[in-house]
Amino acid sequence: MSGLYLLIIVIIWIFLVISITRKAAVKTRGAKLKKIIRICFPVLLMILPVADEISGGIYFKSLCNSEAVVRINIDKARDKEVRLNVGVYSKRHKTLNSIIPITETNYDYYDIKTNEIVLSYKTFSAEGGWLVRLLSVTSSKPPFLFTGFCAPANRFSIFDKYNIKNIDRRM
Image (cartoon, rainbow, N blue to C red; front, side, top):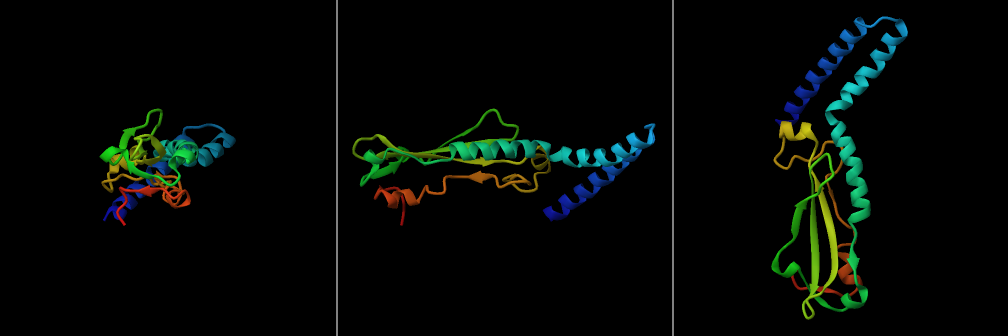
């Protein structure tokens, strides 16, 4: 049903783009300018509803590449038992400076004997742009144009690599 809903919106938007482009071309003098309008207007107008998602996706990818990494004190973490964030699963907060809503989740693992953070990482999840949030096709409102989640690829294998026992992990 939500796919049909989205298809109807896209069809309506295409008709609006064609109508706006025709009106702009009719009111313009000069053959070259009309040709430019007929080519550029549709492209710009079709991108307009997802422009915030394009910009937000670029920022999200940059954020994931720089921040979604495992930080570990190998000397303190090797062969230790750790727990996640003293009984609290994670700390979440909305990141700032983004055109789309992005949630940062911090995972801090403490040595159970010293209570020091020995391993940590962040994950990020993004919602779609204004169009996705307006349509509310799904409750999670994921982006149309990119995967809205990133996490370090080695966030689970790091425990085995350094013989770290996560006492919170249920196996």
